[in-house]
Length: 229
Image (tube, one colour):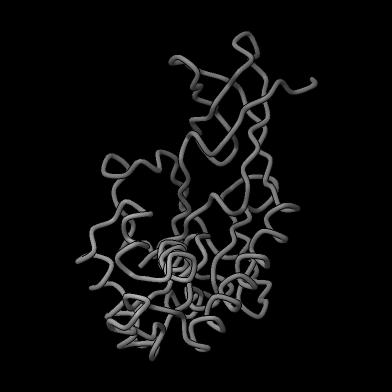
């Protein structure tokens, strides 16, 4: 089980995410599931299967009309519109929090490979985008929404994931909101690493102060810039 920033709602083991929201909006705009699938570049069978799975967990989302002078079609139920509104509120809460949350690690460039630099920091080595090719003393900025948290036993090995940077750490604090939690993780740096996760992920991971976690993030989600020394 991992905790990442991507917004989703969960019911009966089924997650409603951005792709699902996009499908419902497309049905609303196109007036049919078939045309919605075409507009999104998805197969009708795939879209129908996904909608069926969502309705099994969340209740009726689309009303289908067959034949008639208008040729039939589909429209969203009130439940579907309420679901979309809840999802947008969740995404707005994520976005508002993420815009003001960033962790900065200071370090020294020890290797370069194209646009990527390997930076030695107090927390360990970090691969990051480094536009300034001649800078050696740098600071690495990392947004909280780019960090994924895993339970140590479930964390994939570094060579098996595109999240190239991995830190073993311990939860220092959890600032819980209605849907989103700001989790601070001690990783050996001067300041804790900030991550944004859903409250459902906090519960599923059993996170609390002192919980061991693995924080991971992609090299392309970080940026190293020259540091004043």
